[in-house]
Length: 248
Image (tube, rainbow, N blue to C red; front, side, top):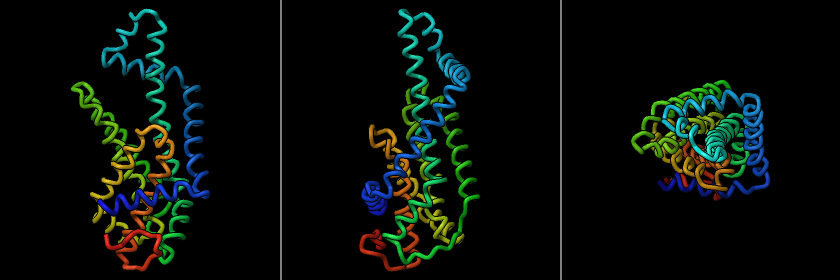
């Protein structure tokens, strides 16, 4: 677990570098703006989906009989908010993975891994396909595990889904620029349990108030540090003293 925590510590350190601050802000702003526009444009559609969901679990019928009516409206508004917030965070994660990762990788690599040669084993097409697959399986997890809510185990769903999404979304992008195709396959396979562990810890941050505002970029930085340190270890390259300990 030491390399995982080391990556997280270095991610927290880099989070407050001036070059990173704008990258922290703009994915969240873009995600909020996107869902505000979609929410306003398709309000009736989203409301219908939420009503169908509430009906499926037997709440909608109860809401129709609640008095005063503002209580029912308040519950429905809360349901909209509970849908909106996760969508914003998930969208911010995807935006960060697709568009902010190159800048973050450059910052981390130049400071901590300057001798690490870029082999370009992955590319934008691979990143996009990986993101689409991650989102698809993430959505399927939500759909297939929803029945757990009926037996009281539904609280596990967000953590399982967030863990999967993080490790699937960021592990490829963290390595794609520097690793060769062979190195990419080796590192993804060799450290698969560590990728999941890092996905779990960074996924938990999404449920911590205030910290969740930084979760997308913090997750990206943690995966970059972990991935590049493992790659440097695989190549047995020397590192700056500020880099991760390659003996782990």
